Amino acid sequence: MTRPYIAVLIVPTGIGAAIGGYAGDALPVARAMAQVADILITHPNVLNGAQLYWPLPQALYVEGYGLDRFAAGDWGLAPVHHNRVGLLLDAAIEPDLRGRHLQAAAAARATLGITLTDYGVTDAPLGVTLDRAASGATWGTIANPGALLRGAERLLQAGANAIAVVARFPDDVDSPALHQYRQGQGVDPLAGAEAVISHLVVRQFQVPCAHAPALLPLPFDATVAPKAAAEEIGYTFLPCVLAGLSRAPQFVTKGDGTKGVTESGSREDPLLGGTLWAHQVDAVVVPATACGGSAVLTLSRRVPIIAVEENRTALSVSPEALGLRAIRVPSYLAAIGVMAAHKAGIDPNSLTSAIAPLAPL
Image (cartoon, rainbow, N blue to C red; front, top):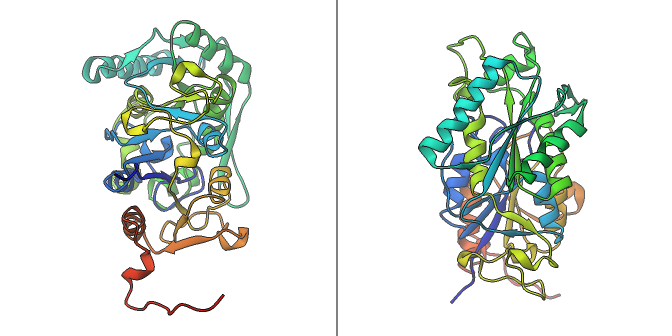
């Protein structure tokens, strides 16, 4: 009997990835990979599609900072049947727009059965600003991180064990960057700031967190690209966040005996609900030009890196530039083939038409 095959799928946010840089457009990749991997660990940028989502029992929805800590071996991932999600709304959200998000949360309770606490509002506007690096990657800041953390803490005290944040983001309807993004050609102008928000909460409280921006609806544009269209179909991006957080694994440390971790820090079979640790990962799949993230660098010491060339980004950080050994593949279809061979214990090179002879050491 073989052990579960566990893969990590990473598409960094805010770097203009050709696949995964838009509204949930990497979700088909995750769905396909989940048919090969017994467990697929990935992050909200891959699975979130605004009002669209897809339930993947094999997938673990892990926020980026938590994924870095997992990769480093500091935190384990404990699967759950469900979480009690606390909804935190930015005080800067206008009454009508706040009402739309509360309706989305009510719909998630009524139609999906998601468990929510009563919602909270921050005690001051978060003050989100957006910016862009010279490379084209996006990032941002919040003026009042204390208000964010105080609001999250109140929800945790009220019984939440996962936090969904909705922050008011700047409306910039005439921005060239937004126009390019809607045409499927640019970098998501919101993604970098979104990551800052969720990172703060996860780092402070060690609980699952994801973010949905609050924005006024954009004017209709018949030329919007399919990759960006999921963000055009409603008033809120919240549904996918609530669905993801409802089953997101809890973070544990090796000394925490209350969440399924043994005294030695080992884990039970994760397919039976046991805690998963980084040393159980079998492969990492990442864009070939975005190999510099903390999780990739850490996991590359132990497992194969599958670098996908087709998924172009605004970065230029190849595995070779970092001295990483990687299996380069042209597409995610090829990456899935490498995973299938790896899971079967087959050298992927043996599936090619030419096999090099053995050479002396």
